[in-house]
Image (cartoon, rainbow over all chains, first blue to last red; front, side):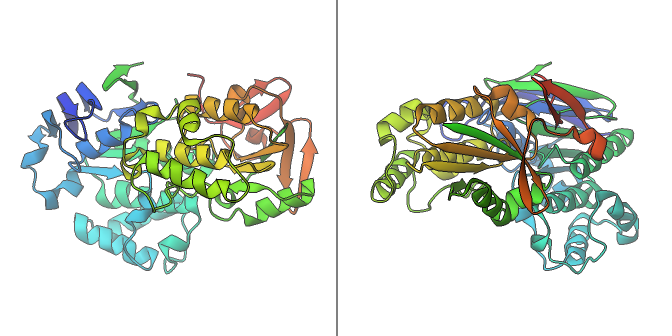
Length: 217
Length: 203
């Protein structure tokens, strides 16, 4: 069962600038999914990067599965926490879909024969020799979702911005991921500018990120 | 000014291969449009560092061609950009970078403008400011090309003429089809007499 604990988080980019996150706390566990809704610049992406250890809080604690994030070796973090950024497709490294999957499996220690069966659920091309960057924009997002949710399969997954939430393939893939993760007891966080309709997701909690803090809706 | 809303079923075309859509628009209206393309977060020219420098640079460039509606100070004030002026463009959040790009694009004195997928990445307040500013300009025509129409209906201060992309052409319609009937999941809402599809909940 996965846990995410944030307590008393303070973050700002420079000491001369105002706090972006101010005394922010959040506890998610046991298959909970959080939808974080906030204005542009409210700190959604910053919070995701902070949870993944890509930026560091000036004060406060980040615990993943009851371990201090700072104490988790960087090479071990992808199994514990992953941040899927707004421009996630810029995180492709390889010249074919298959190489990309193998690369992710190598980093995460995933067994290929265990991850491939989930591939068709993401409505991705059967031809895995295609270049990831040649895929349509929405398919690139689903490929990244597959890599992060199935191959890395971390305790905590932060998905920042959902590309084309009005498109059925996008939401079908997302809802399946979130439902499976919930069933497995893993924690998922979705960040978006407005409240999204998400179906078939148990244990969904909604938060408004306002003035540096989370307010449950 | 005439406001048009063009609904397309092809989200990938909207975001990554919009040339065909723009061509159809030009053919339909019989005119050329200045086009805002939603290249994610590449709105920064790369020649400047801060927001203030970026605004001054772009407006200077616009003035040497078709002209700009607002000078730098007015643009900062009227587009609510003052909290950002001293910051580096690269340090802005994704949505604010996109909004800065939209503000600078909209400030061009082009008589006809076409905006592709403005709703993604932008919070409602940014959308409202965009609509207000466009209303204050002397544009002859503005076209919004979108996949999901509900936000535009909810936030825009005006009535649109509705256009639907069908295969190789654009059709004027009285209402948009409800996508639930054509295989896209979601709920149909109401906006006047207009059927539409959206995955956003009322917040």
